[in-house]
Length: 94
Image 1 (cartoon, helix red, strand yellow):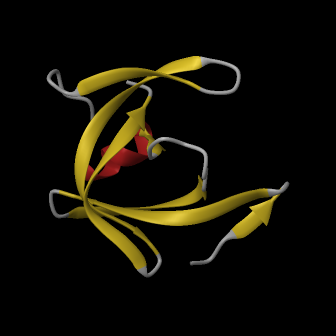
Image 2 (cartoon, rainbow, N blue to C red):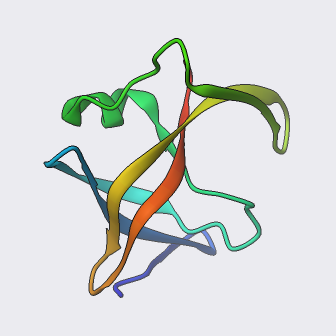
């Protein structure tokens, strides 16, 4: 996995597959202290992954503020050669 350190923080690229469509997202912060995977909803919309009325919505808290996310199960999340199938991820900014 190619990890780039910027200002002491690790960044990677991630590929997400949802219903047969894929998107590669660059500049993803690898947050080892996070309880889940959170991605920007605008970038997820490129593959048709967006908030729908029956999606689970949660309020998350981070440094500075709280925000709402929606949860979806994706077909695959890949970080270079590492991949996992049927993973629930969160979309930020519904």
